[in-house]
Image (cartoon, rainbow, N blue to C red; front, side, top):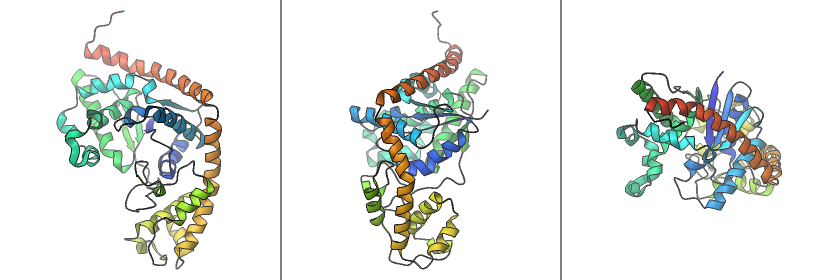
Length: 333
């Protein structure tokens, strides 16, 4: 059976881009694959996190997964930090990862910027931990966006290097799943940038916990241009904000972008924004309610995560037992 692994960092409330670009696809995968959807809190601390806020964000992320339709009877949901084998395997993999491979990672260069000498080791070694996350449970497929494809290729290279070193297939070589239908949801303030939790402007994204008035305000203030909407896709060239708003509406209404565009050809942005606001409010309301309901009983949520983490530890030990033996570590009992 196809085994799928993916995860999201718990750094605040998840947004529309997380939902439409990742979780919607996860929901479909749970019917056809063995799915593990992690809350990657170890990855989150490559940037300093307030400890209490991080704990609350883990619960918020878990509640959001469930409210968006992930079924805990069919998928595994747990916080990365609850399964210490992630870190153990990351160390073993790091001993088979040449520095040159990591030096090629563009995401580190982007995030570290001009101050890479001050960047923490965790940010630099982030891709090795990501590789460990994936191969720990023998994932055969990993849903990835364009910004993570390079990291998955590295994970494949590392797993292959370990297999070659010990002369056996210790680790499964994962395959990428780049969805042709998953939309790339962009910032409401800059249509050339992906919608992101790290953007300092709250107005750049629609949180899945936003109330109706906040959604309406954010869409009303979303950046647009002064021209009327075009009648064909070519007319959206060099109009990223227009394309983004139309893409969001198309996905929510399950329509092709050209069909949605035809409905607004020659119209002003105010008409599009009014319709998009109503569709968003209708779509997000039940998700928001589901999040609040689950957060109202944090102990039940923790209990569910603990049960799933316990199962993950058992699976992880199966992999780690083979790894420890192959690496030559002494077994004391």
